[in-house]
Length: 264
Image 1 (tube, helix red, strand yellow):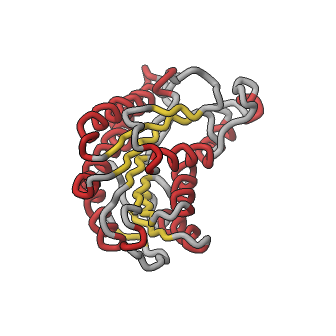
Image 2: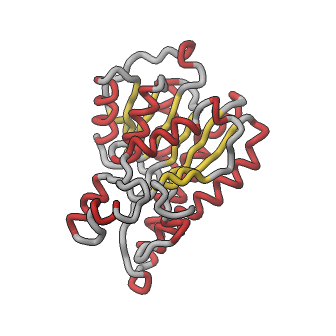
Image 3: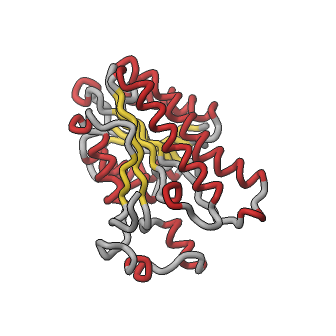
C-alpha cells in the first residue's frame, strides 16, 4: 500500500466532529458519485482505490470543487494494505465514523466454465474486501459510540444474474453481513445498511455495452417504470440519507435503488 499524494485541505476535527467518511472503490463510477456527495455534505472523505493514482486524481477533483478529500492506494482484498491505509487516514483526518464499502468487480463468466481462481478473485474483492474494510474501521465507530456503515450490493443478489454466479453470491453475502452486523453493533450506536443498485450507468457498464454483452441504455429503460437507467447520484442520495442522523432508526435494511424495475 502506498498513499496516493493528492491535495488535501487541512482537516478541522473540531468542526467536522464525527464527519470522516471512508469510501472504497471511489476512484470512479458509483463510488466516486458517493464520495462527491459526502464531500458536498461536509464530510472529510478518504477515497481508497486499487489502481495506483486513481484515488488521488478523484480526491484532487473533489478538493478543486471545494471539498475535503484524500486518495489512498490499496487493494481491499489485501488486509495489510487496508490496515496501512486506515493508519494513514487516521493520521490525516482522525477517526473514521462512516464506512461505505463499494469496491467490487463484476466480470461475466458462464458458471460451468468458471474457474476456482475466478470465483475466489470476485469473492476476495467483493466480500472479503468488505470484511477487511469494515473490520479495520469499526473500532473507531465503537469507541465514538456512533457510526454508519453502508455496503453497496446489487440487484443481482436479489433476482439473480446469468453468467455472474460469483458476483451474485458475493453481493448476497454482503446483504447477510449487513443483518448480522446491524444486530451485533446496534447497541453501540452504529447502523449498518445495504444499498442495492440496478441498471446504473457507469464506465464499466459502458464497456460492457460496447462489447455487446448487455443491452443499450434505451433498451434497458423500456423495462424500468421510471423510464430511465440510474446514475451515480441516485445511489449517492440513498447513501447520504443512510449516513445521516435522520436515519438513526434504520438498520439491517437493504434499500433497493432501481427505478422500480423489480420488487426487491
